[in-house]
Image (cartoon, rainbow, N blue to C red; front, side):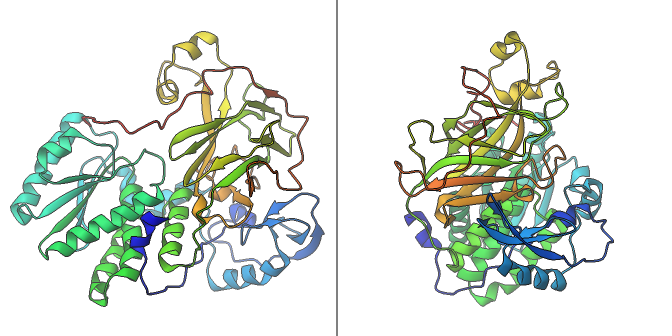
Length: 471
């Protein structure tokens, strides 16, 4: 990836292992003691994702007799060592109130927040529900304060959609935003860190202002990425700044909720430290397997009517038919390759979204023009479609032909009890477009597929960012 070579430095740093929550952790109370698993050997007829290393278990593995925790035989000691060295984290999936109490009280803030991350980095955040007049007034107040204290030596790095109110009040604005509810593209994450470092290194009096409206995690993921960047690419004189960034993340952001944010930070840190080898070759997706049956169909009591949408660089490249999944289904597979047996070529940032198609009349479906508008309109009793899960990944960090995501690694599903606690998603790739890697996932004939044209399934949400908005 030529765009990432400028971020590499000679100094190596050990990659921090991600914290993995086992199924038992989802059921424990926050004050429960750490428990050891009682493993036994088991032969798996179908591949399962390992809860420790997330690689597929093809034949023989280990399973806990109590909580059904699944892992490789070689991963038993890894999990035992990790569990004994750290306490069990509070389960975010089933203890939402506990998460809100543990996190900083950002959900109760309804006004502009301007905070110093370091002496030369400022965070300027606006809540999503702020009105247009309040937003413009806040920009005026922030511009007056910044200009009176720092003159023209500051630049605003806008991490949200482009906004006229921002550019009209600040002399220097760098547009670096990405769509809401998504992690920033890996190339964008690298360019943000390089732009901040280039601006600050030009003059010792320069100030970088990180601006965001909406989810505060936008600022958090950029500060965390720049912390990794400065750990490897900057000198020891910035140790105090790195300490200040860690304190800001603890006080203002807390743990990042969105799994894709954490995954992309792991990508970024691993690529910087060269613990992740860059895979420049494209991948060819042949099948997507969903383990478990999401319960989104209220008319049937359980199950769902699921369809997939795949984006490459936010450009839609694939839409599946509607799969009718009942509550007794253990898993279902979407044949992306189709009858042509040609894998879908993917390269770069990939977004996979799975929706549930509600039963609605044709009038409500034909009059709606976008999924966002139809789902948020107060006049619609039932939205035409509802997100089951989504996940983002980058092909440069995929080293195997099977990529697995547990429930805790799926956006939207990680805190939605309608998605099975032991559910997972597996993506099966082929090394070339013509050949399907043997053996392919078993078909699911009990899951009928509706391939008829449907305008709801063709809705695309990420064609481009809005060019200009007032709020």
